[in-house]
Structures are given as C-alpha cells and as structure tokens.
Length: 156
Image (cartoon, rainbow, N blue to C red; front, side):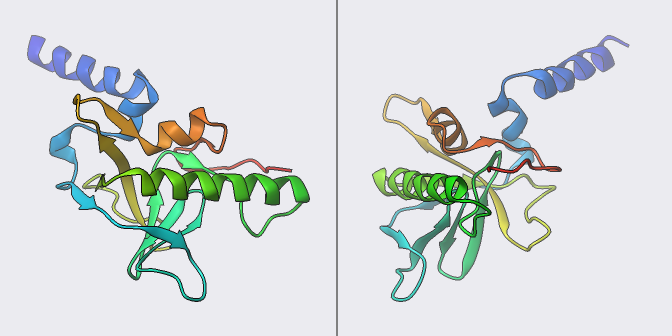
C-alpha cells in the first residue's frame, strides 16, 4: 500500500509544484531534446529558415513551434495597447532565441495543438547547469502570461 501512496504523493507534487513542474513533466514523459542553433529573423517576405511569428510562436523551416506555458498578445490586435504589447513580446522572443542555442522537447502525450503547431518546452542549459526556461523569461519580463490551455483573456 505504501508504494501506491508514494506514487500518488509524487504525482500530486508534480501538479501543485511551481510552474516549471506543471509545464515540464519528468524526462521519461518527454521526447528527446532537439537542439536549435540559428539566427532568427521576423517571419514575412525574405524571412530566414528560423523566424519569429509572434510572442509565443516561431518557425523552424516550415514547422510552426508553439511555446508551452505562455500566452502573448496577438499581432492581429483588437486595440492599440494589444498591438504594442504584441510587438514587445515578439521582439522579446526573437531576442531570447538569438542569445544562444537552445533545446526543445515535447510531452509525449501532447505534441501538437488544435491548429497543428508543435507544442514545445523551450529552454537553454547554462554552463553552470542551471536552466533558462523561455516561458519563465517571457512571463517574468511581462511579455506573456501563464497559459495551460483553455480560456485566454483579452489584452485590451
């Protein structure tokens, strides 16, 4: 009976722990890391192989990558305030992606969203072994808010 209680406690801890634990399941529930190293431009005419669509979505070739755990203002904004916030978020994402190479993984049970975008946990492992999670960076900078699926509030 005790092993079952231990398992329940560990699963519960995973669900109630900090956001990183909510967004990033244990390694055995993730895909192998994919390392990305390149220069990110803005998507549009003349874009590069790597480009940024908005504050939570970027492209690697023809692949659309949606960052897990955040929601950012839409580029096709409903008001001027949202348009300005979307531009800041898009620039912040591009800056982070261009700092250095990073890793992407996916939950093995949820690799795509309803729009067909690849859902990815995006982070960089620093030389000291610490991790720089993109979702945390975007939220802490005020460019994004926490998003675990479902209803998203407006930005206006």
